[in-house]
Image (cartoon, rainbow, N blue to C red; front, side):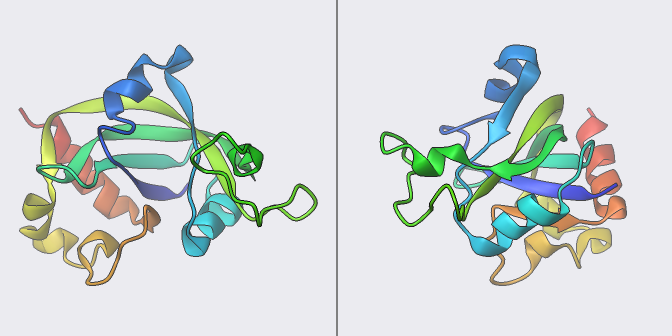
Length: 155
């Protein structure tokens, strides 16, 4: 099993939006970075665990969990001229972008802020706190996932 951190802007797609989707599932589309795309296409697997993170928010931080329920497949929004994720360079016979489907698992009692995450020595090597990491999808370790899950379950 793999563990991931997926970033979203809450005004674009929130943990509550995921929870309110039919069957509490949604596509995770619109990834337009090649390294993040590679993670979705090549590494993300069925039932992998996801930390749901708010970026471009005040405060930024982890707000809940989800799991992958469909492994990487072609992001068809890249071919839809009406979609904000349209990419004229992506072709059906040579697609560039991939997505996964996720399912809601939990919403934390409180946001686990980036500032709080940075305060724990157990999370000092987490990719999230490394300089220059701006990816919207990236792997984390089981121990990082478990540690943040414990923080999220505290009241």
